[in-house]
Image (cartoon, one colour):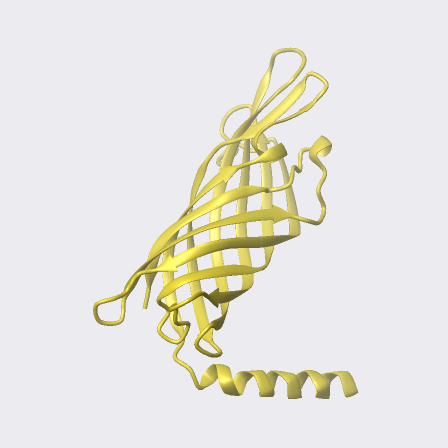
Amino acid sequence: MNRWIFAAVAVAVMAGPLAAQDVHLGLGVDIGVPTGDFSSSYAGAYSQSYNTNLGVRLTASFPVDRNLAFRASLGGSTFTGTAGFPDGSSENLQDDMFTLGGEAQFFLGNGNALRHVGTYLVGGAELDFERFSASISDPTYFPDSVANRSRLALVAGIGHSFRYYGRGRWTLEAAYHKTVTDVNTMNGFPPADYVRLSVGMVF
């Protein structure tokens, strides 16, 4: 009971200053470039690799002061790939990923979190809900095997929000996404490590 009371008080204390500021909502397109074992991995003669993908992301940035904001995000993307076997046969692979993220944004120099303009550093964590599927044809329609995974990832990067006309402004961001739990490349679940390049609008 005491833990619930403490949690409620903590939420109330944090909600006050966050609610007092304007929330900046964003919509963007992500390009994911796999790295490490996600790009290509080998286990003897067996190999697997995933390709560059496109995804979408919704964000909500809550300013705390001029230089700091907390950001929540929802994202969705699909990585496709192939797996090769010692006998020369192959499979098509697919990793459908839905992410829930929470990050801190640190606006540098003349940047302003209250107006969401300028250069910022971003870092935090994401919970990835992934669906791995494989098929000798197309896993989207005919998966021969399916496995679901919920994994934690860390994200760090840099972005820039350009000065605006009215309320909207363009944003560019580059970040690195690294899976840190339930990594098992040998069993077909490589870490979803990739460079994420994003372009979008914040309002």
